[in-house]
Length: 415
Image (cartoon, rainbow, N blue to C red):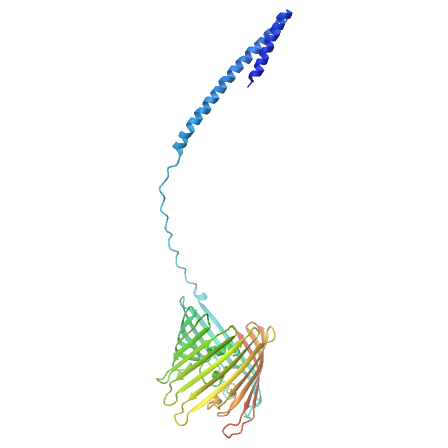
C-alpha cells in the first residue's frame, strides 16, 4: 500500500506543474492532463487502502471478542477419577522339573598298597589294590524346606584275608528339614560323634578320625537328629537320639543319646565337646567323652583331640579306652599339601583286629603316625602318596611285637 506522504508529493507536483505551466503559459497541456489523472488514481488508492485498514481492525477486534467464548466452549469438563484397578495376584511359580530337583553324585577312593613290615608274617610283604570307600548318593528336593537323601556305600573287606565281592549297603536314608540354619533329620543320618571333627580334619581319603578308626563310635545311626547354630555361628550344636547300632538293625530295647556342643570364639579358633551314653544289653553300657580344638589359617590348620570311653563288662571289671590325636595340614603349593598326624592309644582294644586296612593285635598299646602328600590333579581328583607307621608298646607284661609299616598310593575323585 502507498503511504500518504507519497500521494501528497505526487499531488503537490501536479499542482506545481499546473501553476508553473500557467505562469509560463506552456503549450504542453497533454502532460498536465496525464499528471492530473495520475493524481486522481493515487487518491482512489489511498481511499481503498484506508477502507482495507479499517476492515482489518474490525476483524481483529471481532476475533479478540470470540476467543474467550471459544475457549469456554471447548474447555474439557473435569471427569470423575476412575477407580484404580487392583492388580491380580501373580500366579504361583511352577515347580522346577524333576531333573532339577534331583541330584546324583558320588566319590571313590582306593589304594595301591604295600606292607613293608608287619608283626604278622602272614601279612608282611603283602601288596595289592583295594577300594576303601565308594559312595553313590541320590539327593532330592521334596519341598521348599524339605529334602531327602539315599546313599549307598561299597568298600573292600580290608582284613588281608577275605576274598569277596564288593557288596553295597545303605549308608544314608533320611528326610531333612532345614530353615534358617536349623536342621532336623529323620532316619539313618550322620551322628554327632565325629561329624564335625571329620570335616575339620578334611583328609578322610588318607585315614579315618580316631573314634571312627578305633571303633569307639559310629558315623551313622538310625533315629532323629537336630543340629544348628546361634550367635552368628559362634555357637553350634548337634544332638541325636538313635538305636546305637550304627547303620545296622536294632537288636535291643536300649537307645543311644549323643550331644555335641561347639564354640568358635574367633574366625581361626574352634572347639567342641561331645558326650554320649549308650544303653546296651545287660551290664555292657558305654559312655564316651571327647574334647577337640582346632586352629585354621589361610594356608594351614591344626587339630588336637582327646577321647575316653568307659565300657561296662558283664563278666569282668569295667575297662576304659582312651586316645589322643594331633594333626597338621600345610598348603605348601597351590595344589599340594603336606599332612601329618600322630595318635596315642593309651590302652589296647579288645577288638583291634577288626580295624580295617591295618593289621593290629588285640589288647596291645600302640601309637600311629601318618605322613602324606596330597597332590590335586584337578579340583575333584587327588593323588595322595602316604605312609602309616604303627609302633607297639609293652602291655601288661607282654613284650611289644615288631612295628608295622604300610605304604599307599591313594587315588581320590568325586563325580
